[in-house]
Image 1 (cartoon, rainbow, N blue to C red):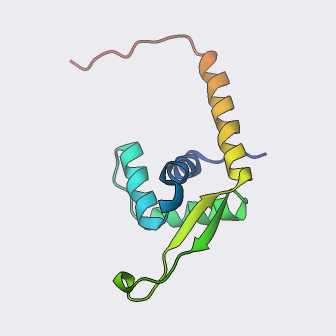
Image 2: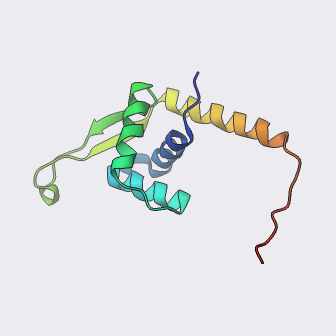
Image 3: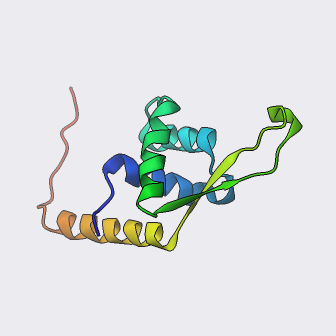
Length: 109
């Protein structure tokens, strides 16, 4: 299995955290919260597309709503392959970090 990129990892984790409320805007907001940086909504869709092509996420069309002018939201769900990719990433991170000697971050001053 080819491991997802860091951006794909963050998006997968965002979808996992959002559960049944993972759609473009909420994913973008979750990514911003996790990274502490502003993200352009368009920057979410290319990785989402790649994750779909890899079989890590599926998109599900929601019910049309009057608040959206009769349009439907597209929700994203992790597949079993997506969950396995996250497990693999976690394992790799754990192994790699165990090999790094402890270090202390110096305070700026």
